Length: 268
Image (cartoon, rainbow, N blue to C red; front, side):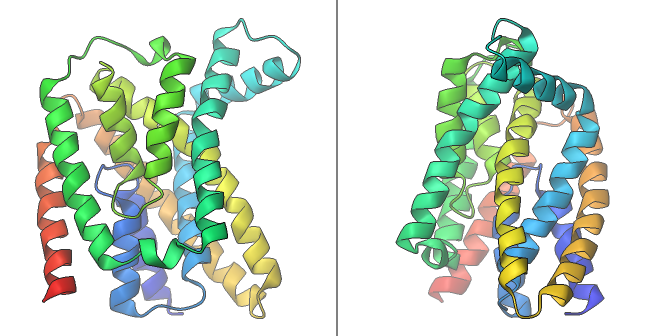
């Protein structure tokens, strides 16, 4: 696999991961253009891991707090704010893990990556993002996150395993629908991405270990992860800086246009 293709794959993932425009849809489309290979899934996971490393660095205070909270929960102490954050992240991750296991067991992965599915999901959830942002108040902050809300956000995050939905998009949509202001919704969405992406990283280790070309795959995955890390951190910093000034409407318009293009390719 060429370095140029890995560069494009990583940059596309890094830029689109935290914008509500579905990184998985862009990766699937890129694989369609470049041709599918047996390494696609492993490389997708690698660039997601690179992106998640950028999240951990950018939100290092909250991430470290959640890690400390995990230890507190293990000792039976759930009264602290850090423990509450850790519990919310655990609760929000469980639905996606269960749904991901169901997809793997039922063999639905290839069907869900169909370009028609991606196109429709881009449009449907793009409209949902626009509507919710338009009608929902901005009255809550990320410190107001409850376990009940974590259950609801976790269920929506599970839906995002369908390419085209956008994990960041649907979780920010759900958080905005609960009344969280834009920065709080984005931070909650990004924190939720950490455990589910790290869990999926276990798949990469398994795939690399069982691959006949494991060394080559590992090298390509490492290159892609590093490039995705740089692109993701830059995109994340810019998004959070301008989130209060820029609404979600440009992302919605982009989703509608890309969804229409994908459907046009699929049906025509």
